[in-house]
Image (cartoon, rainbow, N blue to C red):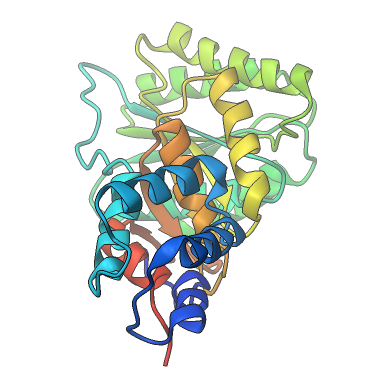
Amino acid sequence: MKGGRPAGRFSLGAALAGLFGRGGSFSGEEAAERVEEVLLGSDLGPGITSSLLERARRERWFGDPGWRARLGEALASFIPPPSNDRPEVSSGPLVTLLVGTNGSGKTTTVARLAALRSASGARVLMACADTFRAAAAEQITEWGSRLGIEVFTRPHGTDPGSVAYDSIRVAVSGGFDEVLMDTAGRLSTRQDLMAELGKVHRVCSKALPGAPHSTLLVMDASIGQSALPQARSFTEALPVTGLVLTKLDGTARGGSVIAVAGELGLPVEYVGTGEGPGDIEEFSVGRFIDALLDEGS
């Protein structure tokens, strides 16, 4: 995968090719209704789908042989561009908080980002504020040993807010450039757990004014329509600044990425596949859209 283009093929382009033939065009309301079914079936969601069809009618895509390129441009417009520039930090380390549901791949993402930052010359501290899962500290410690990156952990059951505070203070006093902080997986339907996550976020600013400087929601790209309500729950609990996609490789449900990014205004910062420390790249909107609309061989 290169910058957002998966090794496998998404279903949207193939489904549209199945309706109208490869390179074909469509016209009339009956065809528009069939397109609507395909868009909804690709997990774009009713909001994005409605906007696309409204634009198609307004700009007279129907019957235009170039409608596929116009669809690609419209889909890309829903995804905010990645920030690219790192947040400015006047003093102390850059703190990044990673949040997400159980099994989304947060700990692996912390390790991959740490490897990426370390390779650029930064001194990184991986902090484990996941004190709910007994194996979390062990997992991040193993990653630290494998990568040669320092870690900060506390015993199972420790208050995660205190871990967040202490890890940042250690990073400040130790002269670290960055802190990448893992958190416990949250069920978006558990308001008490989401409130605790908000507390962890607030505690970071007490340890270092302005922290966390970015909060990344790690999202399993294969979960389909449930991605949007899950992501919305996190944005309501704390100020999420961007997305990291996992399990994008070969998924046929890439439309959910556009639904989340478009509805919530969140840029996709990184894309990860596999389990290796190097399996992470900056997201490319253009390559992602090309893959989404790929008609296949």
